[in-house]
Every structure is written in structure tokens, then in C-alpha cells.
Length: 456
Image (cartoon, rainbow, N blue to C red; front, side, top):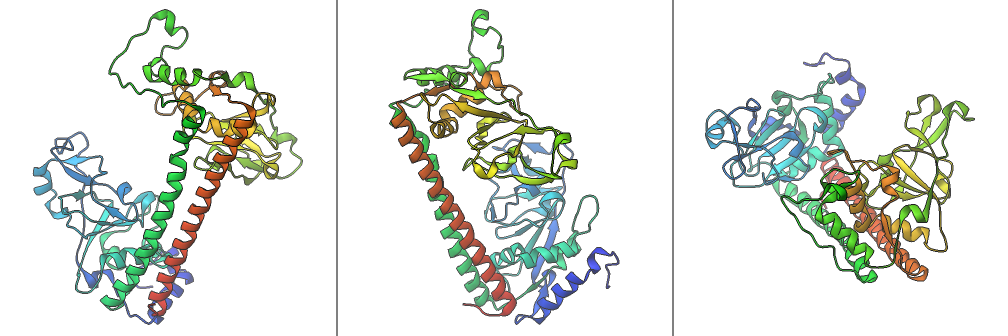
């Protein structure tokens, strides 16, 4: 039992894990055996005089910024005064190639490498490990900790209390195989090649989708809406009518609407019928149902997935009955693009009341696949945002959603546009799927090689 007396850490799964590590070809060592220093920072009093602006300050890196790859301080949101960095927090100053491990809270186990020569500091939720470069590569250790084996070692070390955490002594206890440095470098090189390939494919997928709106504007014969970022503007009370919020009356929204109105168009409420069909859990004939929540729609692809839930545990928002062919439109943060078309597989699912459900469209005027594509374009998503209310958590009511203006080219052109959009999204989905599969395989090879001792 050593120094761990709790039931969780003495489960047989952890003993099996350590037996596997010790039986591997490479003799395992503890983190402290290859570390020159292990330290963490602190957090000066919020609102105190320790903080300053980005131009004058030193990046203060917090656990949420440990992203699994690299940290350079450029994305920091908080900055310390130089005298605090060099005084009170001198002990936690970072150096290039320091390993950063999140040791508290939701991000516990995330690991990155600090890759800048510029000064930076950390808070107490991060452990920084300064490694002996003559024995171990930061890239190798980061890659190892990111493997399922490395995460299981951390899982053993963290204390399963209300807010899970690992202390600095336990970071030093992390057990890992230690191949010779040339073998480490070879393994890391192979993994880096796979990472580069993954990034290239993800970039290709992003390019397919990011260019979609420009292609759509060009296809419709439209110029990009004028952007006019004014610090102040004025409208008359008569112009304001029932909407008094600034965003709704902004020049940018006026330019956007003028762009869409310059071609044949119609309001969504004139093209579509919104369903009010609801589901009552007390009338359910089965013990479970399939539920689509807003997070179940992928904003990048517009594909919805459902989860099976016991009727007895039905969320209060699980009320909207959806059918094959419906469009569901998230009314919460609608500009994120959580808009999906229901297919036969999702027929009779129950959707959140956070969706508006389009049940029928005027087929003589609009192709429903085109409508799905157009609603997911920036021409419409930005309209939804401007018509939303709610500040940091914007939402759009159905009456405002019905006012969104839809460009209406001829039906034949709508079908061509829908085909192109679907084709691009499918190619992007395939690229992302391939990238993830190749990356998962590369990580599995890395883990197998350090456990089995075969570097290829």
C-alpha cells in the first residue's frame, strides 16, 4: 500500500498498470529522477496591484491555457507587473522547454511545453517540470503523459476529492519508461510527422469550409456586406420601434440586410412552417427515448446525434418531437450554426425546446436542402445574431427567426448550391475523420513502442 491508504488508489487496475510498466523493455523512472526542478506558482490577490496590461506585463499562464501541445504566452488573458514576476513570483518563472502539467480541477492531466524565450509565470494550478535535457526530451515526456498509460498513472496519483488535484510531490512520483535519448528522439520524430500530417488535413478541411461563404456570395452575385465598426451611431425613436438594443440597429446589420435584399429574397416565416408538436413523457410507451440536445448538433457539419435516456430522467427541455425531413435550428447562440436536417434514422426523436423546428416549406419556392445550407451561411447566421437578445448568452425568439431574410435564386440554382455545400462538408468530414484516425494510430504506436521496447 506504500503511502496511499485510500481505496481508490489501491484498486487492482493500478497494480496491473505498474506491473506492466516494470515488465517493459525500458526501465521505468520517476519524474523526479530526470527533473532539475519541479515547481508551481501562486495567484496574487484578484483586483490587487500585481496586474497590468499586456503591453507592460508578463504573461500569467493559468491551467486552462495548458492545451495539450505548446504554450508561448501569446494567448494569456492576465499579465503580471514585472516587479511581481521578478520578486514575489521569482520562484515560478518559466524557461523555454519547461513542461507544464495541469494539476487541479477540470483540466487535470493536460500537458504542454512552454516554447518561448520570453518571460512568463504560472499559477498554483500548474506544475512546471524543468527536465535534464541530457537524459530526457520534453517532447518525449509530454507525449508519454498524453498517452492512455500516462493518464492512468496521473489518475492513480490524483486524490478523488471534491476538486481532484495532484501535488508537486506526486508529480515527482510519475512513473515512465526511459528509453535512451536517441530512441526517444526517433519516437518523437515519428509522432511529430503524424502530427504534421494531421494538421495539414485539418487545414484542408478548414479551407473547404472557410471558403464556402465567399463561394456562396459569388454564386449569388453578391458583394461581401460592408463592415462599419462605429464607436457610436444614432437612430430615431420612430426607427427604433419595439427594439431598443444597439446591435439590432447597428450599421453592420443594416448593410447585411441591404446586401441580401439586393437580390430576390423572402423572409423565413413566409417560406417555412414551424412545428409545435410536443412530446409528453407521461404518455411515453417505452422506458427510454432518444434525445437531441443543442450540443448534439455539430456546428461544423450540421449533423445531429441523439442519446438514449430513460423516460424517468427526461430533462424538462426534452419536449420537441421531430420527424424525418424536419430542420432543427438552435435558438440559443444561434450564430454558432447548430442547425441540422433530421433524417430517417432520427425520426421520432425528441429535441430540446432550445430548437425551433421547421416542419414544412413552400416547395414551389425553396429547396429544403438549400434552406439548410443557407441558414448555416454567414449571411443568415449573422442576421440571427443581430436579431438575438441576451448579451453574453444570446437567444433568438421564433418571431425574430421568422424575420431572417433568405436569398431565393431559381430552384435549379438552389439545388446546385445545396449539392456543392453538401459535397464540401462531406469532404471536410472525411478529412477530419482520416486525420483523427491516423493520429490515434500514431499515438497507439508510440505507446506500444515505449511499453514493448520496439522503436521502428
